[in-house]
Length: 419
Image (cartoon, rainbow, N blue to C red; front, top):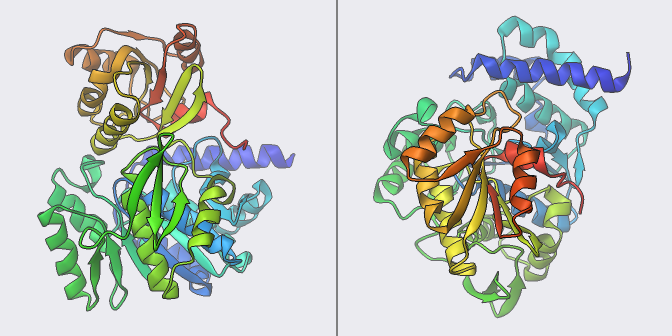
């Protein structure tokens, strides 16, 4: 049996476990961790939770540490094109062979305890980082915090990015309930840096920190950055040092502030030149992409992987500011557990035509259900089930294009691993 066939079989087994859904509790993760002799204790970890922005924070921070010359593991989710994107050491994704080798070690015990997709994937990541002898591992939670399979680690620093309503089916239907889940990553005597202007969120996080005998620092209290715009790109000034970012969304300033505070905590100072290098090499170092990203200028094509109400509000605000009075032909897909109605309502003012499609993922929302929701929200939409056909349809109109709603839709349409 070829290696390619082996990896395909293993990934098929892993993806099939998504059908098990979310199973709260850390007991299976602890069993796997014990079986592998606690690999995450071999290196320093930084743990990041939140609803929006945690991927950006993880990626920028990892890129900064890489540019310092450190060996850095990065664990993020979901992937866009390939499973291996989730687990990286410096700029290198985990190889198929390494996935196979680690999976074979834990296959029997995983089946015995009925471990989920994310529990197995997290164990593979932790073991891979140990094998590569990393200095730091940046660990992003999946959807939660308290019962997330990554929450068996004891990090040197916890970070919580912005919190909003998402995954209510699993985390709770209020900001209070969701924040309690995210704040579950705060550990005893381990500082937490977070981002919120919401008094309920602040109270929950700071109360949790007090219980855990540690501090919680809110970047909103004293933002570090002055910003300005050049050619629609957000730039920042730090201590008189002008830094050009690859971002067009001002919401990324909050993520940059989280990263800078984390760097100062870890190293007691910020190297502005190194930060610029880390931003220049962000995609190469971390694979970070597709967050309000301009893929082409003529015709204008923008892709965005935001997939909840707050992300779509940020998307609207960004596009309305950077491209005022521009109407987009929108290609949209979503996963079945998303609040599509509230996602779509934010982009309605900037939508010329809405083309609904279905990403190639078992969790994708049925296109007929999408159509019904869009129709109820006043959209004159059409449905084209195949994403490639949907993309080609809007491309033929030679109008500005926005592709959004799901990581998996972007992955179906573009090979974004190429620089």
